[in-house]
Length: 335
Image (cartoon, rainbow, N blue to C red):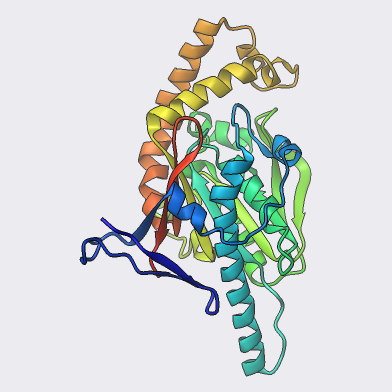
């Protein structure tokens, strides 16, 4: 089985020239790359991060090496750089046609995936690398956690055990924020969420002021409207995306990462007197493992299977991670 993939830098597109014994590769909308094949697409893209940079970007219990950055993130940043350049050129063409310059709008990248899969780390590293390209130095990162309803609202609606499920988000506020970004507004404001107190921080906002790129990271950013609650919504978050990424892994691996993270937090953040989860700090290790697995089974795993995983094939790019958090396979949707 042979595979040949070439890039066309002049047009800024990635063209698929995949052959398998002279036949098409079936009906998949994706081109699938092994880690080695994807790494080769880095070309001459320089590595601009250091080990010290990675220390501040990694999540809890996640080790990301410079090799991982070079082989996975740099090819992706190169691809996105080409896409952003093409989008910027298209805006200039439109301005010429209209005869008046329009307000610049950011290129929006969505990052989706399960709780504990490492999407926040992925988004932080991607942001750091993209900001080092000279034609789009201003890159902002927004998480959809800030658009969860406050705990008081969730308690009133009986949704505290459904936190992170689609119905726990203020979708209209999130959609208004996305619309502001894409309308070229001078600034857009997003609520701020604290994982320590497990709630929205009152009177605190993240202000986004006309960045070149915005990365929007969250559990359900690729979801489409469904159910009675959202029939009135004619658009959804991913309508505003220029590019979307799904961070994927086998569920048993994600559960293992979730339990390990819970045990680490039990000995760190949970011990803070202000922590919402302070009651878990004094659990024995056995009790903590049982508690973490119950939370996974009743909430996070259920949300993954019902709401998050079904959106995977809506992404433009899927990265699949192994148990050690290394990316083993990349799928890029054909254009």
